[in-house]
Length: 444
Image 1 (tube, rainbow, N blue to C red):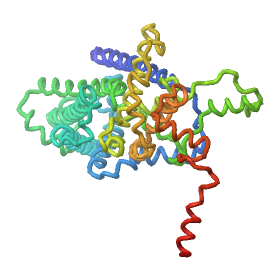
Image 2: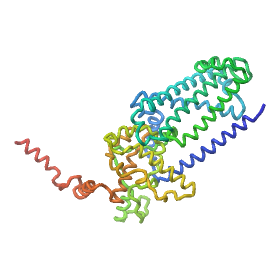
Image 3: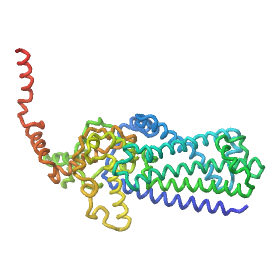
Image 4: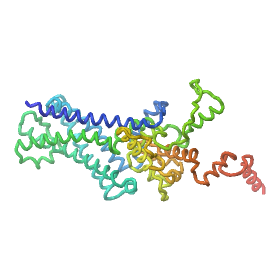
């Protein structure tokens, strides 16, 4: 028997593995362009969050119908890909359905279940294509989704439909060949869904059927490998990053704003206080807030790569709903685009972060970040616990503390807070005068 198919399979697997390794290394390096941050506390709560939000898709079910369709695709992705293990073993060993004799009748049941999931994926993908292109759900029509983002979403749905059709075609022709008694083809006592396609192939000769079955097999496995590589360039990277992203979620109360370590260090320097490790605080004052991706935390950058571009954050944003330019989804897409630009520049031997551009100004405008009300609606809405507000606050802190570029009315508020400990310009000792006035009115 010729070993050429096995050699070709090893070559395809090796090329896909190498490309995937290079891309994952690129993404990892880009994520760690951000500043160090440690989030290893409350490990039990972090595992629970990941299980509920990433595995259980808890936050998706605020809108049941798309959540259910998404769940079908997700379950199919996890379970059907178990069959990829058999594909790989068959490809390396030159066998065909190697698990069939091992599992016996259970194998046929498993294949029927896989086909059910394939049909579920087909229906779900068609429904999502209709929602995006016919119904035109509002959050899918925002300006940041024009061009490649819209094409990417449609392309991935079409690819999934084609891959599922390849599975059904492969099974239909495989079973016809098994019924004709051809060597190495195993009869599975009926595959319900693929049997509906058999009338399309029943009149073909054995050579043609073998060609179609092998073509569908190769198309599916190469499609799976190509899909794995493509995902790393796509918004669908959240398929993998949703799990670490939810594990490293911010577990603090949503209303709590993180203190700036740079300010703490400066105060410690003024007071001559040593750090917890017993060493003196650094003599160089860090940047206040964030101007570029290297000023953000690596968690912020990972958030950007985890973004599903679903737009639930923007759909809930009160600033966006009132016609302002702020879109939390665009903020995350801009962070990811800037990280990609810097990473490619570094790999090409270019200036990297010193290219004369920055996240603030070249990607995200002051008008956008100033529109944010800090309400946390975007954080609450995100199905994978992304935190756009953290990035917005850091950019806004840079504008306020490094550039003194906040609006004039904001500066008056800041001054009042420094002197009067409230946004209003009156003495703290007069703060409860209103209570005396109410009491006097009640007496009258």
